[in-house]
Length: 187
Image (cartoon, rainbow, N blue to C red; front, side, top):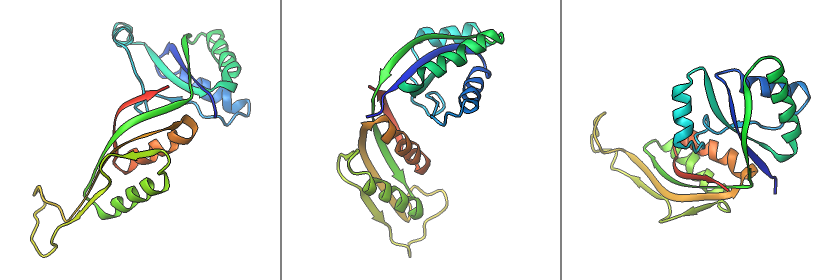
């Protein structure tokens, strides 16, 4: 199981993340650096939101990196400070797994097939509540553009859970297809 670290960083808006990623690539590291806000996994608390509001030139980033890359990350933040870029590490949290609840509603048969394949190929990470409900409506019946009735419907509810390295790619693929996630938690 790959161990990850969530690092909360206070930094200048728009500079720090790119600098750190560039430093990693310049050192030959291909390790992922995930911005949890961009992939909608961030759990800001009220004080962080208030600080960002009061200091518009700064932001608080929640970055997820592999534990083995922590020393490289610290080198990058020290170099940021040396270059005059605000980049302060606030806290770190060890993370190994992720779980989330999802809801799926798709009205396009092509995307429905992609979603069904994702669910089938990743059964060991996915728990469905009532299974997948697929419904075809009579195509002879005239359905208007803005009608609440569709020719095709695919619905599912459930959850995903597993190791971060396994789940992150699946999570992003599922979001691309149309899955809506709630209660996403890093553990």
